Image (cartoon, rainbow, N blue to C red; front, top):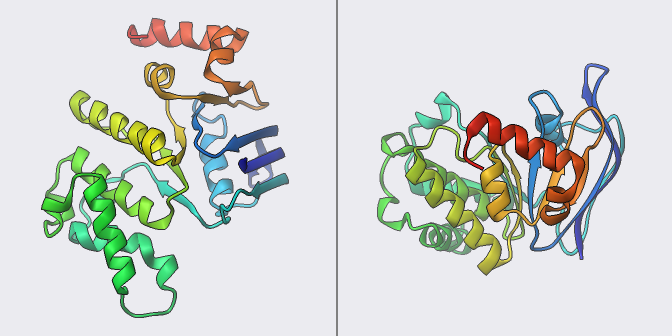
Length: 240
C-alpha cells in the first residue's frame, strides 16, 4: 500500500521554481534513491516531505498508517553536529521528543525504545560516550538510531555516507539495507552514489527542472536517462 503519494508537485523558493510536475508513489518496504544534479531540487523536496516548506503547488499525502510527522530524518552532517556535546544515549533519546510532548522527562517506554534502537545499530556499548568523541561512522549510527526513535516506518536519509571512509560507508549501507530488508523500514535516500543505488535500490526518482524518471531500478537501467546518467557516473567515478 502507498505510504507516500506526491502529485504534480511544484517546488521552489522565493518565487523561483526548481522542479515541477513531480509525481511519484512510495509503497511500504520500498527502497528509493533520489538522484539528480546539484540544484535539481533534491533538498527542496526533502523540506517539503518533512513539512518544513510547503510546495508551491501539488499535494503530498501519507497513508498505510504513516502519519505526516512519522518520517524519520537523517540530515547531512555539519561541523556543528559532529561537535555536539551530548552523550550517545541523550542524542538517541531525543528522537522521542515528539512522543514526549510537554512531559519534562522520557518515560520508561521511550527509554526502552532508545535502548532497543541502539542495540539494533550495535552502539549499546558506547551509550555513555560523548558524541563528539566518536568516529564518523559511529556518529552516523547514533543519528540513525535517533531517527528510528521517531519512526519505525519510513526513513529519509540525505547523503548519509558523505565524509566516511570506504569501510564505514560499506558498513552503513549494509546496515540501512538490513533495516529495509529485515525490518521492513521504507527508505528514501538522497545520493550521488550510483554504484550503491544499483546494488541496493528497488526504485529511482531522478529529478531535474522537470521529472526525469520515477520507477523501478530495472526500468531505470533500461531508460534513456538511466543509461546516460549511469554512463556519465562511470566516466566520472570509474567504479560502476
